[in-house]
Image 1 (cartoon, rainbow, N blue to C red):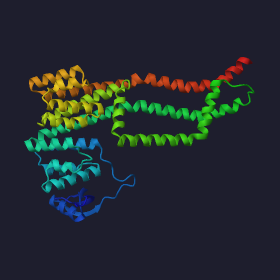
Image 2: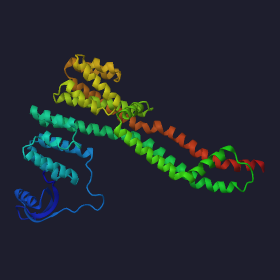
Image 3: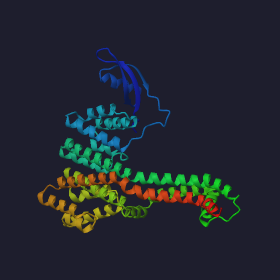
Image 4: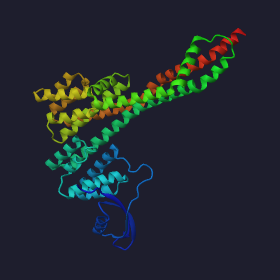
Length: 402
């Protein structure tokens, strides 16, 4: 088993005798020194880079992978040999974990492994779609052009994911803050009023008694509520990870949520179009492409629909008719696909569809806050305002009696 590369900090002299320093990745210090000499550097000091005291290695994010693919595409289009491109991109990366990953793939390629096979050794970061597209580029001799399309595909899909997260984050954050504020009022503020009410010597309104009851329950069983919440979150995560049926029902339910469901639906159509366009550009046959497209849609309903399209097209049905039969795609999308099939420019038409729906998602996310904010504010106003009214209602009644 190959030894994992370690990052070394070095100081040395270049060919002109000037003192320089930097970082390099190698399996051992000896190999690090040998690599520096190969580059024309006389190493004076070489030592392992100390680990960070705050959390160790930095994680590799999908954005890191998208940037790596774009850099490799740019390097190869400029005529830089593959191994040298790995070297330049790897040594210039700020993320040590990403640098180690790139240098590991460089070592594989230097040993005779193909680019696609080197990527395939790291399925956590490079899915089957990317690996298969790179392999198609290697087989066709158009790796540079295809890498550009793959890089664009990853950039677009990651941008789309970021927009969806943004759409979901705002309402979730506001509701969570509202729940925390309500809990603080019930646990710490309501008891102060309760002590005040005990000196009134009169019956309290039913609404006030109801709020006081909730407050007393929270004070006595807050630990039980937190435990139940933790169990619910854990159970949800496990069910989502283990149960295909649960994930499917959740995906179908998410499409029915007002406003957000429409964002998710358009995002799935954009992913479908973008992935299929990229696969077509790589020369992958339609039926074979559909398996990768199904996995990229991000929603169980669209995944099942894509697999039905695959089966129908394999039986001889036109793509646009198969898409119409699923009843998942708007008429505009089906018409664009039909024009693409008739003109022989299906990948270009799918690209235009993907661009349109990505822009639609972008616009909807930007306007989402203005659409949801009134509903959230009304909800919080009713909850917090209800607590305030419940606490002041006895005081108002007492004033009316006086």
